[in-house]
Length: 385
Image 1 (cartoon, rainbow, N blue to C red):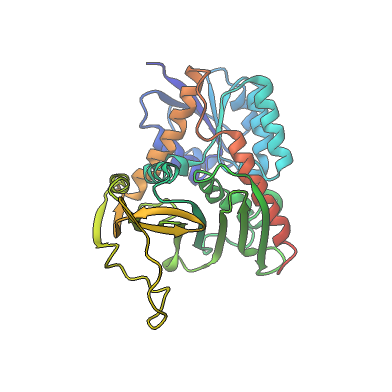
Image 2 (image 1 turned 90 degrees about the vertical axis):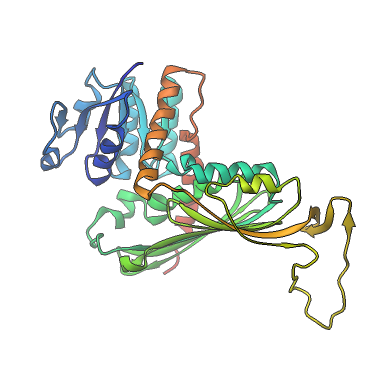
């Protein structure tokens, strides 16, 4: 088994977290780290440490460069690493502008360098399973995805780079791209309309943002992010509305959820394949209550086939025999799932290093696609208060 030497540029809290997770991999060895703050190197042994990131990039021992720095530096570091023939893993966002992101991609294509973006959501086993179920068609057409994220700001003082649009891009670019990309697991359609709103706490801090996205297939996605609440109320929820189902997820790394879905004998097994699936209740379609037609209006039109009742939604006919509610979850704690996803991203990049025909699951173009939407929403949001 080949062991791949890796260097981490940016050794703050997240860089150290990456090191912790990757140190548990047999085929990876962290041989170098770089950061401007020398005190962050405390406790490191048998590892090259650099205050200047360029020295890490040009270390011949380093094969893979992981970039975990402030977003505005990503383009500069990534292109330099590619010029040095290093494989590159870039923490989101790919860059703070689509112009810089395009420069990274152009360099990657010029050098044919293995590279990926750290979109860990794509490697969450729950999300992978939901995306597979969604693409199978058993839930019907997807109509709506709604993301609501309430985050604390006590650990983000006014002078933190997070609030500086030039350094981090703002909430939609620095943070929301994760969730914008997550939507792209559930649709291949291009975005055709994007709008954004934002609230400025003061001249420097935009602490609430919302992006609305319409996709060509009719999917509406909304991303609301607030960094203006106490940590006690920090929560992320996601709602997925299909013709035949409603799915609710909890957690910015989703660990649990509920589903209410119309099924038939052919589609039930796919629903039951959700991780940690547990049925709450099930009602035959004959006994299920449709409250859209109040008493006194008279009976609605009932259509049946040999497979069950015919349900119409959005002009599409489906067949259902029962309405069920269930819950599902990942058994592992959040910290383990997070580390597992971080390792999976790196494993995927290593596959591309060892097999040039392998296509990474989180490509730089995926990073550009979500960044483009975020950037359009940011431009719109900055015109609001």
